[in-house]
Amino acid sequence: MLPTPNAPVPGTTVVVGVDTHTDTHHAAVLDLNGRLEGDAAFPATPAGYQALVDWAGSYGIIDRIGVELTSSYGAGLTRALTGAGIHVLQVNTTDKATRARRGKDDRSDAIAAAQKVLAGMATAIPKDTTGVIESIRMLTLVRNSAVKSRTQALNQIKDLLVTAPTPLREQLRRFSLPTIAKHAAALQPDTGRYADPAHAAEHALKRLGHRVAALNDEITAADQELRALTTATAPTLLARPGLGVHTTAQFLITAAENIDRITSDAAFARLCGAAPGPVSSGQTHRMRLHRGGDRQANRALHMIIIGRMKNDPDTRAYITRRLTEGLSKRDTIRALKRYVARQVFNDLKTDLTKNRHP
Image (cartoon, rainbow, N blue to C red; front, side, top):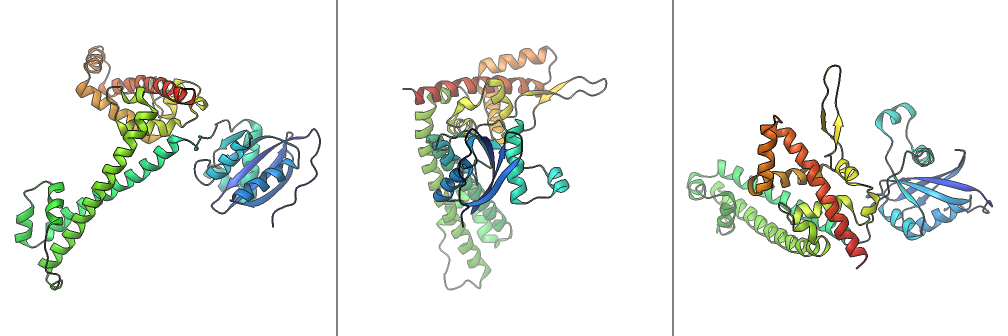
Protein backbone atom coordinates (compact mmCIF):
# COMPACT_ATOMS: atom_id res chain seq x y z
CA MET A 1 0.00 0.00 0.00
CA LEU A 2 1.34 3.42 -0.94
CA PRO A 3 1.71 5.98 1.90
CA THR A 4 -0.91 8.71 2.05
CA PRO A 5 0.50 12.22 1.45
CA ASN A 6 0.32 14.61 4.38
CA ALA A 7 -1.07 18.11 4.21
CA PRO A 8 1.72 20.33 2.76
CA VAL A 9 3.58 22.45 5.30
CA PRO A 10 3.67 26.07 4.05
CA GLY A 11 7.17 27.58 3.71
CA THR A 12 9.00 24.32 4.48
CA THR A 13 11.79 23.21 2.13
CA VAL A 14 12.96 19.60 2.05
CA VAL A 15 15.51 17.40 0.32
CA VAL A 16 14.91 13.78 -0.65
CA GLY A 17 17.18 10.76 -0.98
CA VAL A 18 16.20 7.64 -2.90
CA ASP A 19 17.71 4.15 -2.67
CA THR A 20 16.80 2.43 -5.94
CA HIS A 21 16.17 -1.24 -6.75
CA THR A 22 14.62 -3.27 -9.55
CA ASP A 23 11.07 -3.41 -8.19
CA THR A 24 10.93 -0.78 -5.44
CA HIS A 25 12.53 2.54 -4.50
CA HIS A 26 12.90 3.67 -0.88
CA ALA A 27 12.75 7.43 -0.27
CA ALA A 28 13.62 9.53 2.77
CA VAL A 29 12.78 13.20 3.37
CA LEU A 30 14.95 15.56 5.43
CA ASP A 31 14.33 19.19 6.31
CA LEU A 32 17.13 21.70 5.80
CA ASN A 33 18.33 21.11 9.37
CA GLY A 34 18.88 17.41 8.65
CA ARG A 35 15.88 16.14 10.63
CA LEU A 36 14.17 13.06 9.21
CA GLU A 37 10.60 13.90 8.26
CA GLY A 38 9.65 10.49 6.91
CA ASP A 39 10.58 7.53 4.75
CA ALA A 40 8.59 5.13 2.60
CA ALA A 41 8.91 2.57 -0.21
CA PHE A 42 7.34 2.95 -3.66
CA PRO A 43 7.02 0.61 -6.64
CA ALA A 44 9.36 1.25 -9.56
CA THR A 45 6.50 2.11 -11.94
CA PRO A 46 5.19 5.37 -13.43
CA ALA A 47 2.42 5.39 -10.81
CA GLY A 48 4.99 4.77 -8.08
CA TYR A 49 7.17 7.64 -9.33
CA GLN A 50 4.22 10.03 -9.18
CA ALA A 51 3.25 8.76 -5.74
CA LEU A 52 6.80 9.36 -4.51
CA VAL A 53 6.73 12.96 -5.74
CA ASP A 54 3.29 13.60 -4.20
CA TRP A 55 4.33 12.05 -0.90
CA ALA A 56 7.63 13.96 -0.69
CA GLY A 57 5.87 17.19 -1.67
CA SER A 58 3.46 16.76 1.22
CA TYR A 59 6.33 17.59 3.59
CA GLY A 60 7.13 20.89 1.89
CA ILE A 61 8.72 22.32 -1.22
CA ILE A 62 11.15 19.82 -2.78
CA ASP A 63 14.51 21.53 -3.26
CA ARG A 64 16.59 18.61 -4.57
CA ILE A 65 16.27 14.86 -4.90
CA GLY A 66 19.35 12.65 -4.72
CA VAL A 67 18.99 9.35 -6.57
CA GLU A 68 21.35 6.39 -6.43
CA LEU A 69 22.26 4.51 -9.63
CA THR A 70 20.68 7.03 -12.00
CA SER A 71 21.95 5.14 -15.06
CA SER A 72 20.63 1.73 -14.03
CA TYR A 73 17.98 0.99 -11.37
CA GLY A 74 17.15 4.67 -11.00
CA ALA A 75 17.04 5.55 -14.71
CA GLY A 76 13.25 5.48 -15.01
CA LEU A 77 12.76 7.50 -11.82
CA THR A 78 15.38 10.03 -12.93
CA ARG A 79 13.61 10.57 -16.27
CA ALA A 80 10.27 11.01 -14.50
CA LEU A 81 11.65 13.49 -11.96
CA THR A 82 13.54 15.49 -14.56
CA GLY A 83 10.46 15.59 -16.78
CA ALA A 84 8.52 17.00 -13.82
CA GLY A 85 11.04 19.84 -13.49
CA ILE A 86 12.59 18.58 -10.24
CA HIS A 87 16.32 19.15 -9.62
CA VAL A 88 17.86 15.66 -9.55
CA LEU A 89 21.39 14.87 -8.36
CA GLN A 90 23.35 11.66 -8.75
CA VAL A 91 24.33 10.07 -5.43
CA ASN A 92 27.14 7.54 -5.12
CA THR A 93 26.31 4.39 -3.20
CA THR A 94 27.68 4.12 0.32
CA ASP A 95 31.26 2.85 0.43
CA LYS A 96 32.07 -0.57 1.89
CA ALA A 97 33.81 0.76 4.99
CA THR A 98 30.78 2.83 6.00
CA ARG A 99 28.40 -0.07 5.33
CA ALA A 100 30.54 -2.36 7.46
CA ARG A 101 30.56 0.18 10.30
CA ARG A 102 26.92 1.30 10.23
CA GLY A 103 25.12 -1.62 8.64
CA LYS A 104 22.92 -1.44 5.57
CA ASP A 105 19.23 -1.47 4.71
CA ASP A 106 17.01 0.43 2.29
CA ARG A 107 15.91 2.99 4.87
CA SER A 108 19.45 3.87 6.01
CA ASP A 109 20.66 4.07 2.40
CA ALA A 110 17.86 6.48 1.48
CA ILE A 111 18.61 8.64 4.54
CA ALA A 112 22.32 8.62 3.67
CA ALA A 113 21.49 9.71 0.10
CA ALA A 114 19.44 12.65 1.42
CA GLN A 115 22.23 13.58 3.85
CA LYS A 116 24.76 13.66 1.00
CA VAL A 117 22.51 16.00 -0.95
CA LEU A 118 22.05 18.26 2.06
CA ALA A 119 25.78 18.31 2.84
CA GLY A 120 26.72 19.20 -0.74
CA MET A 121 28.53 15.89 -1.28
CA ALA A 122 26.24 15.01 -4.20
CA THR A 123 26.69 17.55 -6.99
CA ALA A 124 26.77 15.46 -10.19
CA ILE A 125 23.91 15.95 -12.62
CA PRO A 126 22.61 12.64 -14.01
CA LYS A 127 22.99 11.83 -17.70
CA ASP A 128 20.11 12.68 -19.98
CA THR A 129 18.87 9.33 -21.30
CA THR A 130 16.03 10.61 -23.47
CA GLY A 131 17.89 11.37 -26.72
CA VAL A 132 19.93 9.85 -29.52
CA ILE A 133 22.99 9.17 -27.33
CA GLU A 134 20.97 6.70 -25.28
CA SER A 135 20.22 4.91 -28.55
CA ILE A 136 23.94 4.90 -29.34
CA ARG A 137 24.68 3.46 -25.89
CA MET A 138 22.22 0.60 -26.29
CA LEU A 139 23.38 -0.30 -29.80
CA THR A 140 27.02 -0.16 -28.65
CA LEU A 141 26.21 -2.44 -25.73
CA VAL A 142 24.67 -5.06 -28.01
CA ARG A 143 27.50 -4.78 -30.56
CA ASN A 144 30.17 -5.23 -27.90
CA SER A 145 28.34 -8.30 -26.63
CA ALA A 146 28.27 -9.75 -30.16
CA VAL A 147 32.01 -9.09 -30.59
CA LYS A 148 32.72 -10.84 -27.30
CA SER A 149 30.58 -13.82 -28.29
CA ARG A 150 32.28 -14.04 -31.68
CA THR A 151 35.70 -14.08 -30.02
CA GLN A 152 34.54 -16.89 -27.73
CA ALA A 153 33.23 -18.90 -30.69
CA LEU A 154 36.46 -18.43 -32.65
CA ASN A 155 38.51 -19.51 -29.64
CA GLN A 156 36.33 -22.60 -29.26
CA ILE A 157 36.96 -23.46 -32.91
CA LYS A 158 40.69 -23.15 -32.30
CA ASP A 159 40.48 -25.34 -29.19
CA LEU A 160 38.41 -28.00 -30.97
CA LEU A 161 40.95 -28.22 -33.78
CA VAL A 162 43.71 -29.00 -31.27
CA THR A 163 42.05 -32.33 -30.38
CA ALA A 164 40.15 -32.96 -33.63
CA PRO A 165 40.99 -36.06 -35.73
CA THR A 166 44.17 -35.57 -37.73
CA PRO A 167 42.63 -35.43 -41.25
CA LEU A 168 40.21 -32.68 -40.21
CA ARG A 169 42.89 -30.77 -38.31
CA GLU A 170 45.31 -30.91 -41.24
CA GLN A 171 42.57 -29.82 -43.62
CA LEU A 172 41.83 -26.58 -41.70
CA ARG A 173 44.91 -25.59 -39.68
CA ARG A 174 46.68 -23.80 -42.56
CA PHE A 175 44.01 -21.08 -42.69
CA SER A 176 43.47 -18.04 -40.47
CA LEU A 177 40.88 -18.41 -37.73
CA PRO A 178 38.10 -16.37 -39.49
CA THR A 179 38.67 -18.42 -42.66
CA ILE A 180 38.55 -21.65 -40.66
CA ALA A 181 35.16 -20.52 -39.34
CA LYS A 182 33.89 -20.10 -42.92
CA HIS A 183 35.17 -23.55 -43.92
CA ALA A 184 33.71 -25.04 -40.74
CA ALA A 185 30.26 -23.66 -41.60
CA ALA A 186 30.47 -25.49 -44.95
CA LEU A 187 31.31 -28.91 -43.47
CA GLN A 188 28.85 -31.75 -44.18
CA PRO A 189 28.97 -34.19 -41.23
CA ASP A 190 27.10 -37.46 -41.33
CA THR A 191 24.08 -36.74 -39.11
CA GLY A 192 23.65 -40.40 -38.27
CA ARG A 193 27.16 -40.99 -36.90
CA TYR A 194 27.48 -38.64 -33.92
CA ALA A 195 29.01 -41.45 -31.87
CA ASP A 196 32.06 -41.27 -34.13
CA PRO A 197 34.37 -38.48 -32.78
CA ALA A 198 35.40 -37.53 -36.32
CA HIS A 199 31.82 -36.78 -37.34
CA ALA A 200 31.00 -35.21 -33.95
CA ALA A 201 33.98 -32.84 -34.40
CA GLU A 202 32.71 -31.81 -37.85
CA HIS A 203 29.23 -31.23 -36.46
CA ALA A 204 30.54 -29.11 -33.55
CA LEU A 205 32.74 -27.06 -35.87
CA LYS A 206 29.85 -26.55 -38.28
CA ARG A 207 27.63 -25.20 -35.50
CA LEU A 208 30.37 -22.84 -34.32
CA GLY A 209 30.99 -21.71 -37.91
CA HIS A 210 27.31 -20.84 -38.32
CA ARG A 211 27.40 -19.00 -35.00
CA VAL A 212 30.38 -16.90 -36.11
CA ALA A 213 28.65 -16.09 -39.43
CA ALA A 214 25.48 -14.97 -37.65
CA LEU A 215 27.47 -12.82 -35.25
CA ASN A 216 29.39 -11.29 -38.16
CA ASP A 217 26.09 -10.24 -39.73
CA GLU A 218 24.88 -8.82 -36.40
CA ILE A 219 28.09 -6.82 -35.90
CA THR A 220 28.00 -5.48 -39.47
CA ALA A 221 24.40 -4.32 -39.03
CA ALA A 222 25.26 -2.64 -35.69
CA ASP A 223 28.27 -0.92 -37.28
CA GLN A 224 26.08 0.53 -40.02
CA GLU A 225 23.52 1.78 -37.50
CA LEU A 226 26.18 3.32 -35.28
CA ARG A 227 27.90 4.98 -38.24
CA ALA A 228 24.66 6.66 -39.27
CA LEU A 229 23.93 7.87 -35.73
CA THR A 230 27.44 9.10 -34.89
CA THR A 231 27.80 10.86 -38.26
CA ALA A 232 24.57 12.74 -37.64
CA THR A 233 25.30 13.46 -33.97
CA ALA A 234 29.04 14.27 -33.86
CA PRO A 235 30.37 15.07 -37.36
CA THR A 236 33.06 17.46 -36.07
CA LEU A 237 34.49 14.89 -33.68
CA LEU A 238 34.25 12.03 -36.17
CA ALA A 239 36.29 14.02 -38.71
CA ARG A 240 39.31 14.23 -36.38
CA PRO A 241 42.33 12.03 -37.22
CA GLY A 242 42.35 8.77 -35.30
CA LEU A 243 38.64 8.97 -34.44
CA GLY A 244 36.41 6.17 -35.68
CA VAL A 245 32.78 5.28 -35.24
CA HIS A 246 33.28 3.32 -32.02
CA THR A 247 35.62 5.77 -30.28
CA THR A 248 33.23 8.60 -31.20
CA ALA A 249 30.30 6.57 -29.85
CA GLN A 250 32.17 5.93 -26.59
CA PHE A 251 32.88 9.64 -26.04
CA LEU A 252 29.24 10.47 -26.73
CA ILE A 253 28.17 7.87 -24.18
CA THR A 254 30.63 9.22 -21.61
CA ALA A 255 29.60 12.84 -22.08
CA ALA A 256 25.83 12.20 -22.56
CA GLU A 257 23.23 14.41 -24.22
CA ASN A 258 23.42 17.10 -21.52
CA ILE A 259 27.12 17.83 -21.91
CA ASP A 260 26.63 21.10 -20.02
CA ARG A 261 26.76 19.01 -16.83
CA ILE A 262 30.54 18.79 -17.49
CA THR A 263 31.89 22.20 -16.58
CA SER A 264 35.24 22.23 -18.41
CA ASP A 265 37.69 20.21 -20.49
CA ALA A 266 39.61 19.53 -17.27
CA ALA A 267 36.49 17.94 -15.75
CA PHE A 268 36.01 15.87 -18.92
CA ALA A 269 39.65 14.75 -18.80
CA ARG A 270 39.17 13.62 -15.22
CA LEU A 271 35.99 11.81 -16.22
CA CYS A 272 38.08 9.97 -18.84
CA GLY A 273 40.90 9.20 -16.40
CA ALA A 274 43.26 11.54 -18.28
CA ALA A 275 43.70 14.32 -15.73
CA PRO A 276 47.11 14.61 -14.01
CA GLY A 277 47.21 14.14 -10.27
CA PRO A 278 50.07 14.43 -7.76
CA VAL A 279 51.65 11.25 -6.42
CA SER A 280 54.48 12.82 -4.46
CA SER A 281 55.81 11.26 -1.29
CA GLY A 282 58.84 12.20 0.77
CA GLN A 283 61.57 13.36 -1.59
CA THR A 284 59.69 12.19 -4.71
CA HIS A 285 57.74 14.82 -6.60
CA ARG A 286 55.86 13.69 -9.68
CA MET A 287 52.45 13.50 -11.37
CA ARG A 288 50.48 10.69 -12.98
CA LEU A 289 47.10 10.34 -14.65
CA HIS A 290 44.01 9.90 -12.54
CA ARG A 291 43.24 6.18 -12.24
CA GLY A 292 39.49 6.58 -11.85
CA GLY A 293 36.92 7.74 -14.35
CA ASP A 294 35.35 5.93 -17.27
CA ARG A 295 37.88 3.26 -18.25
CA GLN A 296 36.26 2.68 -21.63
CA ALA A 297 36.70 6.36 -22.45
CA ASN A 298 40.31 6.13 -21.26
CA ARG A 299 40.83 3.13 -23.55
CA ALA A 300 39.36 5.13 -26.45
CA LEU A 301 41.85 7.93 -25.78
CA HIS A 302 44.69 5.42 -25.76
CA MET A 303 43.60 3.88 -29.07
CA ILE A 304 43.45 7.34 -30.67
CA ILE A 305 47.01 8.07 -29.54
CA ILE A 306 48.27 4.72 -30.85
CA GLY A 307 46.62 5.38 -34.21
CA ARG A 308 48.02 8.89 -34.47
CA MET A 309 51.50 7.69 -33.54
CA LYS A 310 51.40 5.56 -36.69
CA ASN A 311 49.62 7.85 -39.12
CA ASP A 312 49.66 11.48 -37.96
CA PRO A 313 52.86 13.47 -38.77
CA ASP A 314 52.13 16.14 -36.14
CA THR A 315 51.81 13.52 -33.41
CA ARG A 316 55.02 11.79 -34.47
CA ALA A 317 56.87 15.13 -34.51
CA TYR A 318 55.57 15.97 -31.03
CA ILE A 319 56.67 12.60 -29.64
CA THR A 320 60.13 12.95 -31.19
CA ARG A 321 60.55 16.41 -29.69
CA ARG A 322 59.44 15.37 -26.20
CA LEU A 323 61.65 12.28 -26.23
CA THR A 324 64.58 14.48 -27.23
CA GLU A 325 63.79 16.73 -24.28
CA GLY A 326 64.14 13.73 -21.95
CA LEU A 327 60.48 12.84 -21.41
CA SER A 328 59.72 9.12 -21.35
CA LYS A 329 57.44 7.59 -23.96
CA ARG A 330 54.86 6.73 -21.30
CA ASP A 331 54.76 10.31 -20.00
CA THR A 332 54.54 11.60 -23.57
CA ILE A 333 51.47 9.45 -24.18
CA ARG A 334 49.97 10.75 -20.93
CA ALA A 335 50.45 14.33 -22.10
CA LEU A 336 48.87 13.46 -25.45
CA LYS A 337 45.88 11.92 -23.69
CA ARG A 338 45.22 15.17 -21.88
CA TYR A 339 45.52 17.09 -25.16
CA VAL A 340 43.15 14.75 -27.00
CA ALA A 341 40.65 14.89 -24.12
CA ARG A 342 40.55 18.70 -24.47
CA GLN A 343 40.08 18.37 -28.23
CA VAL A 344 37.32 15.79 -27.86
CA PHE A 345 35.46 17.86 -25.27
CA ASN A 346 35.49 20.99 -27.41
CA ASP A 347 34.28 19.07 -30.45
CA LEU A 348 31.51 17.43 -28.42
CA LYS A 349 30.41 20.83 -27.14
CA THR A 350 30.27 22.09 -30.73
CA ASP A 351 28.31 19.11 -32.04
CA LEU A 352 25.87 18.63 -29.19
CA THR A 353 25.14 22.33 -28.84
CA LYS A 354 24.50 22.54 -32.59
CA ASN A 355 22.11 19.59 -32.38
CA ARG A 356 20.25 21.22 -29.51
CA HIS A 357 20.00 24.64 -31.20
CA PRO A 358 19.82 24.19 -34.97
